[in-house]
Length: 365
Image (tube, rainbow, N blue to C red; front, side, top):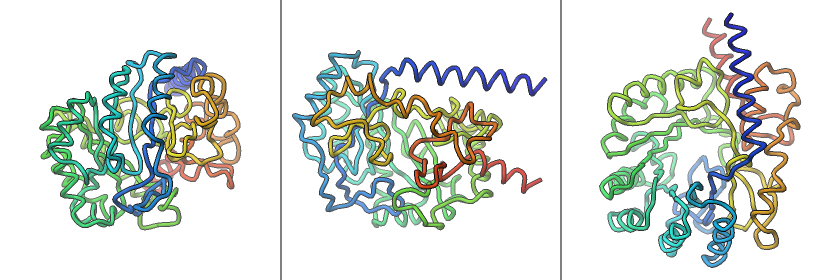
């Protein structure tokens, strides 16, 4: 009976993914506002830095593209998420966001918190920000080590408190877990809740960007299983305390794990419901994808036309059914894992959550 139930559950979730891909309603738009950053984190997927030459599109260009999108779609249904680099290194960031809100877009911000104070938080609240994500990687020692900037932990905690005090509806801390910080998640929970944050999102680091080949940043099979178990426990605690705790949607875990650590099952929506405008003008999906996956450039292409007529490799993932994925029983629901984890040289994901977790379960038995 369980086997029949699982097949029906898989078929239903596969149908949801296919229908979403066929309809491809734009619901999230990432804007990589710059690749400049005031930190040089050990794990950065975009390899951003203080002196990056890709400084980002000018405000007029961005607002022109947003105006075009607002005319084609209902902007109120699209969450514009501003990221980088560090968005707040741009002095025009808040005025641009206020104008985007005037066009109808809901908007959010991803920041490392270094440049945030009461005035910045209050200005963003007045501009209509709906949610903010601030990096907070556990204890002070672990956070400052990962971010490679002394004092960054304190700035992150203060930033979360500033946004909470300013009345931003969703204030989310995001934590990158490494082998050295895995045992400190309980302490991290206390830190997050003490700031007034409403949400906490946790994820492990993957072998992409600066983290590629850095074993000290990557969890092994046992570490991944410990992470999932810890998140499941912290979610229960969060429900009592009024804090939403989730494991980030980075890859398919298997039904036994999915329902314990997330509000909704994994589904890579890059190019399905999610698009991105990169700092160099590339029209992409999520921000850590390789450049060959770009679908155009706003300097020469119309964004709306690209969204409607391209993105086929995102919406039909059959090309990813090769190598170890070809014979995998989870293919129907996983579809090759997240696109930003695809290793084009190996023609396989560089990280398979399901395999790693189930190897750990098998080893434990």
